Image 1 (cartoon, helix red, strand yellow):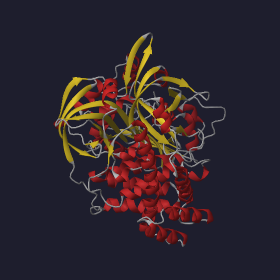
Image 2: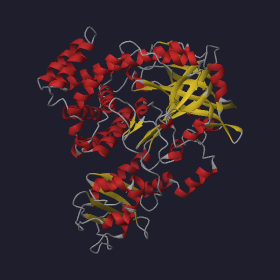
Image 3: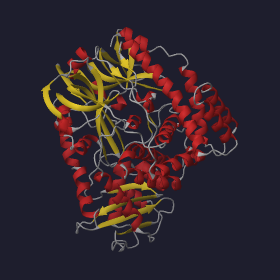
Length: 463
Length: 168
């Protein structure tokens, strides 16, 4: 990424701050609850309806605002409000991503997979829908132990249905945060945007199990760029960003693929890799920085589904070289319409410039005088990247992200000079075991959490 | 992302609302949680691999309890917390930090607490009977997470939950 590109990224898209103001008003109303909405809440909902005027959501949202104002909100009303909020943030996502694509010269094909209606809702989904409704009526400030116990039941029921894994993982993550914050009423500041994001997504996910439409399949050579690690108390996901060179000689594609596993809160740091041992080829490719030959993997938009039995390990390849040569020419695809939200923006870029500390202590990378803040709080303990290493970097392979009005660069890999030697560090370096002797020793001292819990599960669970 | 005590997080989507659990050895106390208004957990028996103790301290009243998972009272409870409760408190302090545990239990930390033992010494509750079944079933549900099949279904919502360097 060059300085001119960074400069173009920093321009604020027209209408963005107005849209986010409307969202913020809605989020405050949700914090207080739709069950006893006040004057300010009514005004915020009216602003939301105004913002959607003339769109297909106009009618349902107006009806929903009337119902909430009259104190008679039904589940379909709150679903319309969740849809309206999601549409606004979806538009924000499109504007921000469009600006990024223009700055980087990145070609993005539109979403083409047909979106069919949702399939029939299993009972667990109905229970989840009821919970999201109740929490919206109550508001975050009214959340109590009883509502959280109900959430635990919904999570358990959803986990039992594989198609509802997304709902279960989302609700479990939110419920843990609420549990840690109860009583929310005494919190100085409620994370209103975040929790409303999760609420709106939760409501949309419960409108029916997503259809598993046919995806096209692709074959070719997969060159990993880096891996992004996500986790909360009971879930972990590694998402690999890679360039796919199709076997049919078509243009290079920027794709994402990943695997996830359930976990418990006491499994943290490098131990998370052991939970993914069912995918040895993916872990080896990350740890050894190897390319992969893939055959007939389903591709929806830019999302490649992972199947271990359709993948073969190939030659080693330097992800920095892949980024330098292939990122500028690779094209990409729009994401699923449901996933359009600024938080979902994670675009791989290569930045060759020096890291610097701003006056307030935050770390930024500077290219031709233009700065992007570095998201050093997104460096997973499961890998070797640390803030100090990032501060010493001369090149950074990372993901451009956006939150609360600014762009951030989340490092996935860095090249740095340590003790006069050039070293590379990648998030996935420890996928097959910790390679840093000091960290490995600490790991060994703590013992194998996964093994201890599996032993306990083996003795106690099936009795 | 920013921390709970950071600047304005009202308009941020990605915020570390609570710090993740800190790593600790699990062999002696495989399960600790602050939930249902209690510090509660499961302590492995030192003598019998098939037996576990269910121990808990109630927030506010500081009533405490320890029994086997089959509801047989712990023999070590003689007017004061047993060794299982001590182990539970020590591991809770490791996992959550002493401040969070003390705040949850509503224990006055005064000028600071060093470990779980000091925390228990500040309790002013009695041993009171409580059913081990609720806590034990929560532990079994906890363990059941590790039995769930690995999923290759993408979880886009986890972009709200980035892994952090906490616990490093």
